Amino acid sequence: MSAVMITRKVRKWEKLPGKNTFCCDGRVMMARQKGVFYLTLFLIVGTCALFFAFECPYLAVHLSPTIPVFAALLFLFVLAMLLRTSFSDPGVLPRALPEEASFIEMEIEAANGNVPAGQRPPPRIRNVEINNQIVKLKYCYTCKIFRPPRASHCSICDNCVDRFDHHCPWVGNCVGKRNYRYFYLFTLSLSLLTIYIFTFNIVHVVMRSVDNGFLNTLKETPGTVLEVLVCFFTLWSVVGLTGFHTYLISLNQTTNEDIKGSWSGKNRVQNPYSHKNMIKNCCEVLCGPTYPSVLDRRGLMQLSPVSEFSANDTDASPCSSSTDSSNSSKTLPSTKRAILCLHKPRPPPIRNNPTSDDLKASITDTAHTSPAHSQAEESSAAKTPPLATPETDAEASVAKSH
Amino acid sequence: MATEFHNLQELRHSVSLVTKVFIQRDYCEGTVCRFQTKFPSELDTRIEPTLLEETVKTLNSYYAEAEKIGGQSYLEGCLACATVYIIFLCMETRYEKILKKISGYIQEQNEKIYAPRGLLLMDPIERGMRVLEISVFEDQGSGSSSPSSSMSSAGSSAR
Image 1 (cartoon, rainbow over the protein chains, first blue to last red):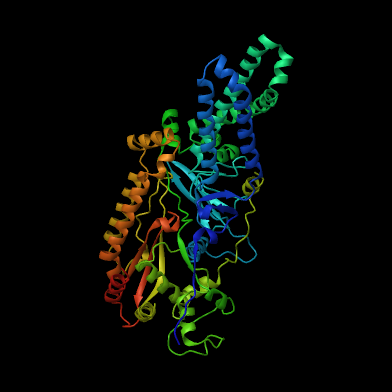
Image 2 (image 1 turned 45 degrees about the vertical axis):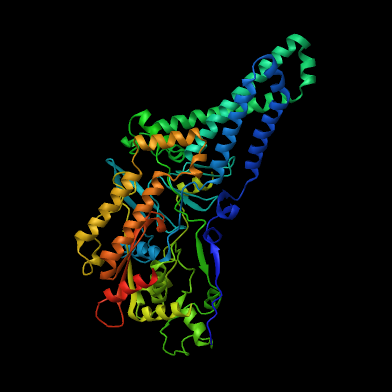
């Protein structure tokens, strides 16, 4: 019988855990709730449209044609920064694959020793010393990793994000290591745009009122009232936010750390990441290297339909090619059993290059189900550690309330 | 397709995964990407500590170069900002260039040093830059650990 292996090639983003939405075949990555993002877009585009429609013709003629040109450039910059913040990967850390998770579990259990029955095991924390400061690395029960310093788990997106700042509903995405500078540039340029539009609205109303009278001006350009209202409220919030983030950048802190008071100075705790120099801190955050995404969203992976067979046959043990028809409970033809053996009964590990690594990875997959490798079986059977509980500490609840 | 199966089944006889060893990140210097140079005890009998240490140190130096904050990164950052980051559509960032070098280096190390000893290094980027994964294989067929021929043949046939 000839083997017909019908496998589907899918992009990795389709199988990524977490609560993100992906668009354009994995090129765009956002949070699930996008309503507020659309509102942001609408407000920016709408207000600028009104400005170009009502104020710009008058100002271009009576003041200078550079006014609308500069406004247009600023508007495009704001939009670009907003879209870049919203659509890029904030620095999501991929979850641990089963082998890594069990390796970490074994290390934890070895470190804890014997916990008497009925007693709560110690919290899963690793201490590292960074710049003469002890930093605690917490274990993430969802991602099954010890979070790197400054990383945090976003409960809205259900991902651990590196250098997690906050989850911003206005941009519809988390703000983390990879998109923080775009977020900052967005708030900064939006502040400038708001101030610009507000100022020229006032100038326009004043200039026109001198000729026509105040009420007539408002009747001729009704958009002005709307613009002034939007700009007035936006000014307070966005300019305030820009100021706050400028302060954070100069201290090399994240919003998350600021809220938790991690480096507030109590107990002589100081920020180990700060260069103690405002310029250096700003340069690092804004002009640092552009970190690549470690989530290979557009890579291809094989999705074999055999995983459906193995759902009924989870302990698909032995896959030696010798005729073990008794092993699998189904009477599969030998070729299909061979396929079963070549693919492990769990979701396949993420494989990037289909070269020798792929071969060896598929070998490792088969090896996992070999009876000789009892250790792997034990660890794979104990996928959820017996002591795993969802995070119950206060900080987790604070994070969830964001 | 049939030929590939044939090779895979052959390989399955000859080599099997014993365990995976994970070298964790070293955060002593902050959030810069660095891996611990501490030699894992599981690899005691498989490889000389100096070789692994050399590999890890070289990888660390690559990552340090990629994440260096200096003239070149400022220039790249400012240029990118001035072009509203459109330049990244045409240009590869410095970090990406170095990642390619790292991937080439790991492949070369696997071919020369690790595969003959029945080990396989996984590029950290495939594990989210969290760990350096080393798969330990053992030659099943012959009983004694002489995986060199099977591993290198696997390597050469797959390329």
